[in-house]
Amino acid sequence: MAAARALFAFVGAGEPPAAAQEGWGAYDAERIVGALVIERASGSAMLHGPAVAAPAEADTESAVEAAAQLVEQALVHAAAAKIDTVFARPQGLDRVWVRLGFIPVPEAELAESFRGRPGIGLFGWRGGSALWSAAARGRDRRTSPAFR
Image (cartoon, rainbow, N blue to C red; front, side):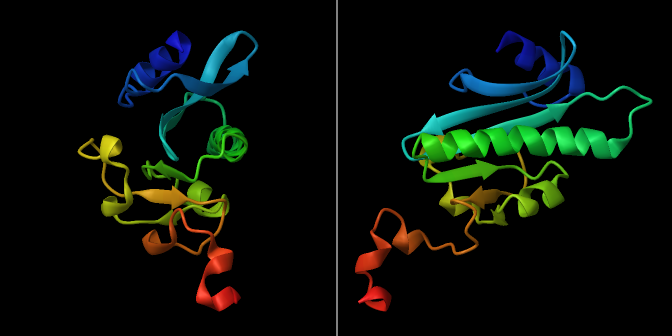
């Protein structure tokens, strides 16, 4: 985690909170060049990052792809850990979020422990489904009138 936090500082991204103790890294030999950290609050999680530091001669597409791969790893983890909803701040990576099934959501959807933090805009992921309803959270959808 120390290497990830150092990378966040190097690229000028806000440091993830101390509660964020799990993450993924992208490496060039021994050097960390990308990091993504996840913070969990019951059935929800907030992604911090991805932060990627590409060499000056590298093309931007490879940096964006590295960021996307880090997010994909986090989503596999989220599904395995039974995390219901994953939130992320846009950070100019809208095409990555949309490609991976995130959609823009209102701040009111955030878990209480994630509220009041810096950042503008919010994306949410629920298993890659674009169907989003706060009313249905925690309810078995098979028991809803539409499935009877």
